[in-house]
Length: 572
Ligand SMILES: [Zn+2]
Image 1 (cartoon, protein in one colour):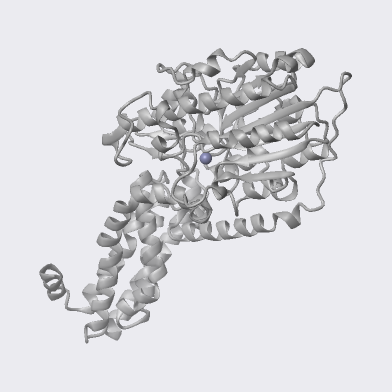
Image 2 (cartoon, rainbow, N blue to C red):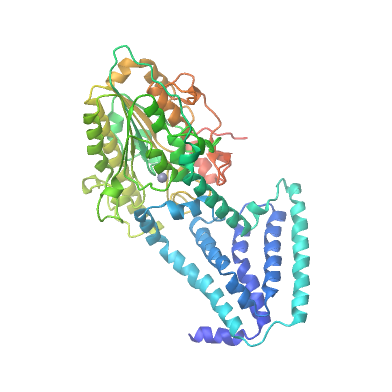
């Protein structure tokens, strides 16, 4: 309290308060000036324009503290922006950040919040609270800003604004097209908030905007009319480099390595590092190049349904409210495990919990069957993702997500992969035991950072991805019967093992494996077809725009890893 009293003693005049607010309001801009790769001219404008605006706005009341109280949402936004900058070291609050606030389930949020709680407390104690205290102090000081002071600083603010705006016109000199909604904080953060609200509105209206859509999907019968069963397993937060199948030093995927009929693809890059953007691409004909169709078309579940398959979705992630949930509700049967396990809002069952339901679907239906299994894979908190008997790599109990616990985190992460290996093997065995014509496609929605290099990055869904979040495992297992029935599809898949692939191929590959015909199917995107063509791989930008994945802001450490894992990208 003494410190606060002393501080209050020093700050006795409204003019001092005014300049302090001018500085404090600019703190996020100053940090962004250092972290964002803007050309110098635009960088300077990104400081001058907001400074000019705030110096002007603070003059609207003779006690600047009153203005600050009116701008309370800005002060809170600044706090959030500073938390983000601390966590990721760069970027303005992205659309996905706003959307994740509303789409994460209780368990996911509690796991993450527990870890960033300290950061939030620090930012609020060192930024938000001091600003608000100063605002109270300003209101309490009897003195007011004089008319002469307001005139003088009003003129200064206008001049600064004029210079800042002129600098924007010079941005083409540095090969940059200036845009208020991208380059100036907080306009960019607010635009992202607007974009996010607009997007959740579109999500909410999906059932209306897609109501009249039909794939007109058909499946020509085979000669011997065998039952066909296809399973799509949507993985979570698994990175290819952690699978021994892909060459990782530890034996994390021995069962997949030994599985006959398995084809795995080595050069796969996800189109988004965010579950809520990546999975809709996996489940529909949408892609980073054409994301908007998720609102006008239906999902792969409907395509199979139209083609005469019984469809079932069994999910071990809470997906209500997201596009993923809307897609899953198209199925004949939708089982949400996370909603069924009573009293466990703060933890999720292990992925095996979906298997009895899969078996039930296999047993109770006699016709063709399509099942989507949505797993929790190796999502943080890693050591909660597997039963004790899979704790092969130890110690695996990290006390928090900090670089000091990297060994424990990596061990737990590897154990989770070992468990995924077991889980996939069990599905393949269940399918093989039916002697039906069956196949299973597995891929992860994105990867993960686990304090891998000097950047000390962790988790995923950051505004700018890393190699570790992009390179994912992707595999297809074809049963014995399938390989005998459709040898050409199995052979085609084998021939594409090292072809550059993205997550937008899943929809087309899955339909092609099942022999479903629809105008929406593009065989140049089917890994089970000889005509598969390698495309420049796009990444879905924050405003749902396509960006070549190597131009998303990857750093030298990422390119080193891309080269190490033979990932193809344009080196121009
Ligand atoms: Zn995910």
